[in-house]
Image (cartoon, rainbow over all chains, first blue to last red; front, side, top):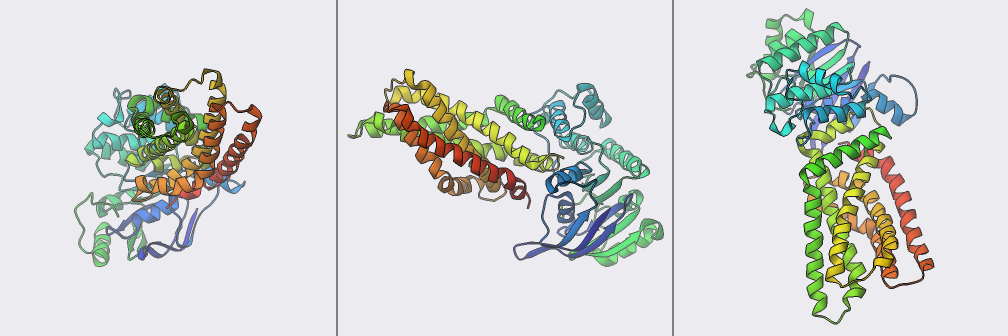
Length: 244
Length: 222
């Protein structure tokens, strides 16, 4: 589904990725680990089409043929991207935010459908309040509803549990378990080895801009993974670390 | 078309709620009029003759502030990322933002123009349709380029400073011909003389609008 070859990204003289090779098959659920600055966010941004690689290539199998711009737009329609930002307009209500993104995504924009999505992330009754009045955790929940509004089959998640309370984290875990069962593909950047091991089918550690470890989860029990993780990156930091 | 309207209506809803862009544009535009009013009154230059230039200086600076504000709002909470990830041709995002920028700028221009009638003692009631046409075509030319360059500037550290630096040299032909057309209308010239500046403004808008539509998705990416 996704083929990454010799991927490199430089910001001036600073390299975020050096030479990353990765093949991601349909249905792979990848937990991506690495130190802050290892290139996880950069990798996800390139996959999402938000950044251009400096060298190498990153190809997502097209949904169908067609002209370049149309194919790119259709490919974006299959991707759900959740970054550190919620991508929500603070001066619009939750309903207005989702209605706007639904119209752009070409999915139903009626209030009942959107209120259902808002309710699903535990924000029922708050639909008509401006997002500016929401707490960080509530905004993160609504950001999840926005990112998955169009039922994407490729999920790109950058530290998705950051800022979520227990209920929000439980919702996201349930969603990801369901998405994995449904055969969706996912690449999520995390710092919590145990959480990643629990949710993913494949574990990838990026170090110095390349893949230092790429293993099937079932072939690597948690303790063994922790040992490999520590050997590459040092001891496991507390869960919910910062950006990469 | 539905997506273009969605972007426009979203920007309009936010602006009607916050009035961030309009307040900034109006404040700056009126200050420009006040400064020129006093400068020209004490000099020998006839204020009426200077009005076209003063008006377009006020429009251009107010428009720059408005475009900057419009894109700065997209950076808050990473909204621009969310827009870029939508399965829509990114050129449509450009058209939606350009439409919103044009409407905000025209609204600010209307108020600034009414104020200029007082400051420059203008009587132009019979010329209003022609002035409206010149303002509309000139503003389209300005926002066709301004929307693209505001998207370039918003991804840099010096966004507020960078936009005027890169915008004004490119948009200079628009300003020159808009001033010329405004002067012709205010001077009571034959309407046939308006053809050339209006044609130049229209061609500029179409050419730069097409280029901007095609380039917009590239300037948004890192």
